Length: 311
Ligand SMILES: [Zn+2]
Image 1 (cartoon, rainbow, N blue to C red):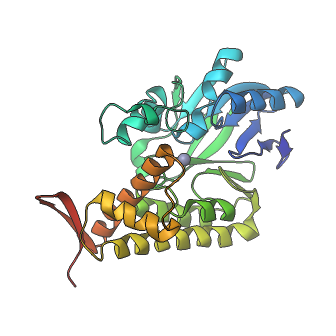
Image 2 (image 1 turned 60 degrees about the vertical axis):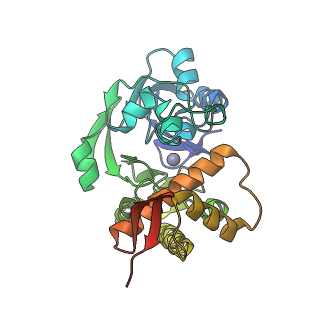
């Protein structure tokens, strides 16, 4: 059932929280659609029960667990348009690109072609915001289904991820994670760690009353600061762990194995999708360490070898 946040904003709680904005004339905007047709169906039922008709979907970023419900909703409801930020839109329209990048650009092998990494393709009719301004972190005004919203850039977790602000609520997507989710993941998934940290600061400076992460509990303004700090701490801990993994030189695969061992002992990650996502996050931290002058990579007989920068 839809949970009210303010007079015109709601959310459907779940492993993926789905945001809803009522337009005021019986229509609704969904913010993300969850993993698959089950989450799409659950959202449809919740909107039906609230007497709301879906008009628009805003996808905050391209990850399969945020766009996987689009296909069901677009097939079953007439007149729904999809909005997404630039760059993310390309990956939403061509979802094979997610398993492709997790496979170093190669044709994805079978284990990567599943709903966790590859959503059904979805059209994107409207691009939300300007890419250069998202990269510079400038909020932008937009109108979706007649409703004025603010697009808050929160890149880092994904290339050009956005949060959406409306009616005193910040739908923060994966700009931050709830404490239980942070605990579970070891390393919060990142594409660009420096941007991820800057995005946390951007969220901390917002004055909305409510913040809804994609994964975690709805939090009030007076609590979100602590959660954003916990996210920063988890990211910094992750960087330190990856740096520690370079005590001996090694390639990204070796570094990943050392971090996995440090976090989970001799237990393997639960599946191939989880492993490639984890390895992707380690790769983001290796790039971040290089940016900070703490690590460097060179081509050697065994491949691309990372080592700590001599100090
Ligand atoms: Zn995500």
